[in-house]
Length: 184
Image (cartoon, rainbow, N blue to C red; front, top):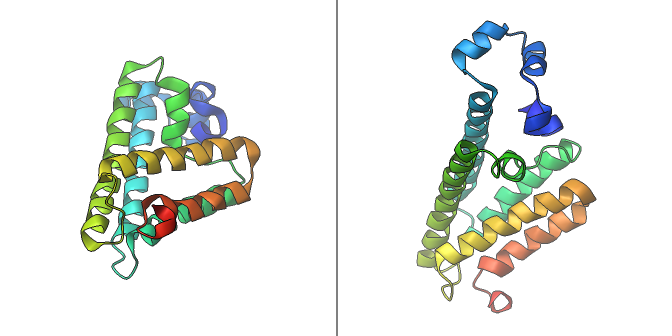
């Protein structure tokens, strides 16, 4: 995963992964079969990490939904900053680098992003039922806007390395999804 973050999909070679891991080339190809299969396996691990992190925040019953979503985003931001602004979102990185040229990657990314969206829709719908998420927009619309906001924030921050712009997104999440008059 570190190599894909540092060098991108195309800049990461099987040989560099093997050198870093100490795995013999034959074992790599026996297990994965190709660099693409390896990349997809790494992406799957990354997406499971993201869904687990989101689940951790969503299940915090003592917080209203907007604070859960802000906490989730803030934890991603903190990890990104600790990485020296290097490790944002692997799904976003792969989306921009390989989804246009690899149908199998595009399909997996589409599926992964749909799963991420489904988690958000579920959380937002639950928040609407509890009364702490606005009801003038559907949970699906809010999830789409939230996912785009978060992904866009990391894309911009990769270049700007501006913590304040990331923190501005944190303050925008409650405005986007909350029920306060300022959110409407």
